[in-house]
Length: 397
Image 1 (cartoon, rainbow, N blue to C red):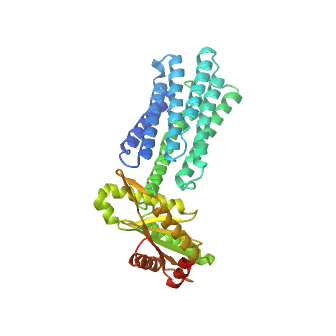
Image 2: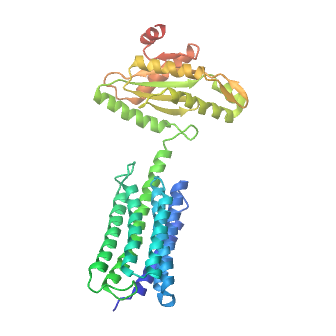
Image 3: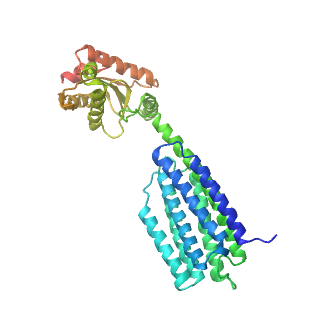
């Protein structure tokens, strides 16, 4: 059974359209940017389907319409795919660069397709534009990030490389073959294979895109499950994970580690006076004050209500007490404006240091909590350590 360019093009058009509808149907969940990237990829497939449809209907179109319209749709689909992928990866969209590549590519194709017809140069010009788009995709896929070495990235890199190689092969056949075809619709082996393999690309690229979309969603859910919704700091789960990891590293390196338990004094009166909305504003301001005093490597999290924890790896008890006092002083000296009223907030802080060979995070946190209770009991707005003798020496120095 002989192959026909029109039949192959029609199959590719239907396949791309079905993929577009399937991807669009899957855009009901996920964070905004991730969901938008999937919609954009679906739109690119729909545009690509229209391009294949024009090639399938070439018998009813003027040659200039096929050249100008078909290539415009193809380059537009390529550009949309670039932006969709970079959006999904959280990279800069580079839409201006992508737009410039599409416009320059189309102008070259139009010139060598209609004004000064030269099929080989036209294909070379259009291929160069598509390779530039592929380069933007591959650059984004090779950039760093939490999912840099993922399976989905690898699949997409392989498919992008295959697409570039297909274009190089096609141009090589056109330039070095003794009897190259005069246009895409002419029956020729190079045209058959190019249309067949090009028509298969949307399927494999979409599989890779969906795998990456799923990985991104999983990563987003992992992060959201570990972030306090109000303040944006670590929640109890994330704090426990971080503390366990830091404690293990401290034991292996033989380095100290400290935990600061911080509680806003008389916070119930803040909620009673300003309502929970005002209380939320105070907590956000408190987190800002604490963060301003921390150094690189420290971690802050909220374990409930107005209670926060700071993890300080590679920090001795003496250094942790200095840090805690700096936090306490910063909060005390930073008046807060809540609903037009000035509020003077203070905090009590309990500090605990790891003991030699300690591996129990819960026990470390319990000691810090006991020190916090002692600070509250002693009158609030003060720092206490789990080692009372050392704390007394430090604070009286």
